[in-house]
Length: 235
Image (tube, rainbow, N blue to C red; front, side, top):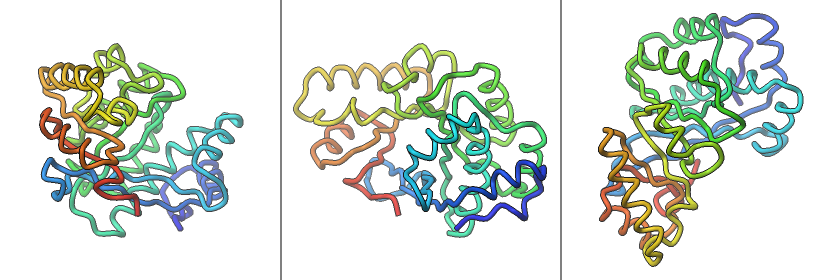
């Protein structure tokens, strides 16, 4: 269980965080050999409801910012407790970012250990805020960390959004690659996407790889990184 009461945050924020009952699991992101881990994605696991239910509830209460702060502080605590050495990938709402005092507290709490170790994944919902993205981009670049577009091809994350955001990494949604080994339309689409993103010096991640045949075909296309049940489940 992740606890927040010891963090250097405003008392109102701490009270809101104290209402949460959350654990974190991690799913590895692999290099093309399928064995070498590039990063660990932190995935929130509430103890009394599903993640979807939690997000819907906090969305209704206009408290998604609480989940944003909880994810950053909670995921990083869990990451360091596990002793991982590779990068950690943390989900972030495209409509939100930590406030200045919260970002300062985050840096104060974790210090230089986070430099060059984080990937911030901009989710595909609920909506995109350019103002918040620019602030997120500024703080991430300052700490030599990376930015990613999550679930490309789903929700709000499309070519237009990638062009605006100019991330370091684009994660292709499962819908784009499911059955790609025998679907010529998906093959052509993903081949073009890989070429486009590589031309902009962006890494491409295939998400939701569940079959050996999918993995083998994507390796042949030159996809950079892989995540999915075929390789490893969250744990």
